[in-house]
Image 1 (spheres, rainbow, N blue to C red):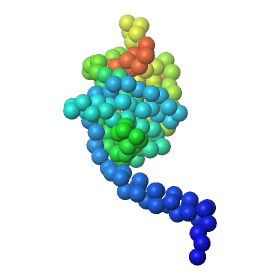
Image 2 (image 1 turned 45 degrees about the vertical axis):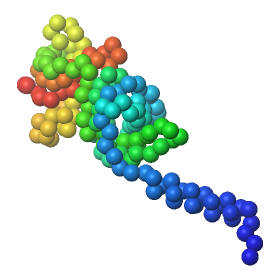
Image 3 (image 1 turned 30 degrees about the vertical axis):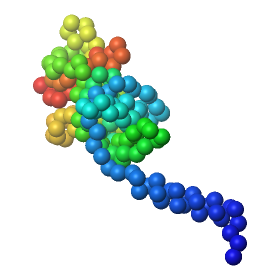
Image 4 (image 1 turned 180 degrees about the vertical axis):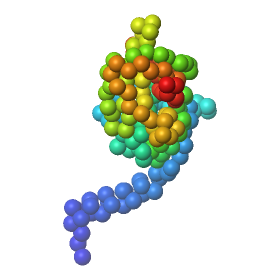
Amino acid sequence: MKIFPIKKSIASLIIISILSCSSVKTATVSGKVLAIQKGKDGYTATIENSKGRIYYGTISIPNLKNLQLFKQAETGDTITVKGELWKMGKEKQITVREILELKHKNITEAKITGTVQSVEKGKDDYTAKIKTTEGTIYFAVISIPNLGSAEKYREFKIGEKVTLFGEIWKMGNDNRITVKKNLD
């Protein structure tokens, strides 16, 4: 029986697909973020582990197991991710399913007191623009996972005076606080 060229091509594609899928494995990668390449639904982080190996971690909202776990890394941060490890040429890639830990390079914990200027709702959280008594503007990210439980979560209203405790960091020129406690 003769096999036509199209059938040979399809058979070859199926065999290649099966072989390439078998080389994908789940792994955990930890290291320093050397670079960030922004994408449509997330970003790619270039991660260097303690042995000097480079991994390219695709971190996107659709790929994560839990959308609430999406976190934006910055150059210089340390990160631990879990997902499918694979190669593209000689480059080691990881499709991130979970961000296990993210430590920002310049994070300090602090308490701020101010007045809510605006509230922008997200899918699983919200960001409140807070103007402190000193006149500094902070964008406060408020979510159940960061607070630790649903009982601690509440939505602020514009004009409300609040005292918050959390991790202070920068995104571009904006001051941010990832709220860990509402002290009111």
